[in-house]
Length: 181
Ligand SMILES: [Zn+2]
Image 1 (tube, protein in one colour):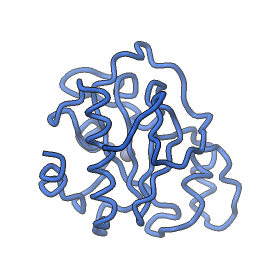
Image 2: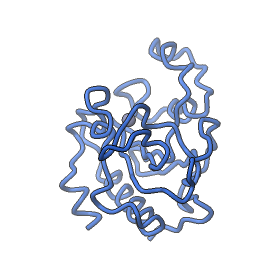
Image 3: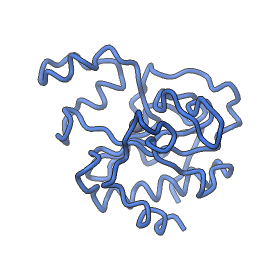
Image 4: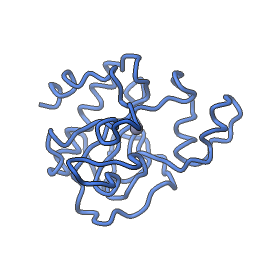
């Protein structure tokens, strides 16, 4: 079990993102949303996701960066291809990952959810290290925030259908759910 102290994962690197604010009710943390991201799209291992969530994506390394550099988004955590975890926002704060969204009829999922990004794409398989780490992180989060039951772990595409596709068909929900059972 990974330790969570003051709403931070002890196992993670901590890179604060300015893209967050207060939750309307910090004691209502009751949903876990799984995403993917890669920058540039389909490329792994660069420093760009961290820069993007910090609002410091100034590189001209790829034309796509021009389209997104003004976006103010974040997630609580990122799990990289090697299983390394970066935390950008403490869990009791509201990260900006879900956008227009709804879970079981309740809108504004950012208000009450934790967002975890996997470094990946909708089509390329995630790594075993990512599944293992995600399962460890998810179990610790569930232990610390017991309102996040197994049925309240969902994908971005499930809370923003038609608008978002991540974590994509490459994410093996069956294998992941077996790991956290
Ligand atoms: Zn997403």
